[in-house]
Length: 274
Image (cartoon, rainbow, N blue to C red):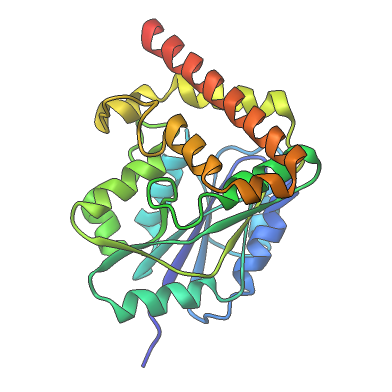
């Protein structure tokens, strides 16, 4: 019996530091029937050159990753589509596990794949600790592996959103299908994060968060299931994990609090300047 084709989609923009490892991990999958599609957004480095070493299906599209992803799905031939970021590396059995899970349960339309962080320096260790709290939490983790038919049925990623688009798509999928999960991991390369760069990034996403909340209204962004209070409660519900390395835990809480503050300030700035 022929294996279903899986279209693995990677979006890029100036990603030479992480892309080769990402694409090598896709090429090294144990599952034998994949097509790799890379959609670049006007990179000025050697991103496209690296991509072309792994696939002929390299395109250029902007302005943001949602448009890149939707464009890629429009060109894809697969029965399933798997959305991968260029700073991710896949365990060898991820695609095989996803296909097996989807075929075993026809009610499933999408799958969540848990992520582990790695990187260099103190703040990367803080990010790794933070992400470890989210594994198995449906309010925070979002789907990346989809039935292509369902992806197209719900309209794919919302191209008006810059931030929150993963949660938005997963919520729309849940309205007409079930979302499962697999136990294999995606390794997320945080690189060598800097405190202020990370906080500024959250401010940027906060400025654009209005589009997400307009279509996913909540009583309060603070008390939402994925909001600050829920996350602090989640962190504090595992005191042993925090106390195992108190310095890293303190750094994680400081960084997360600063991100929340920057995101909130960005949201208010975007709201009142629009």
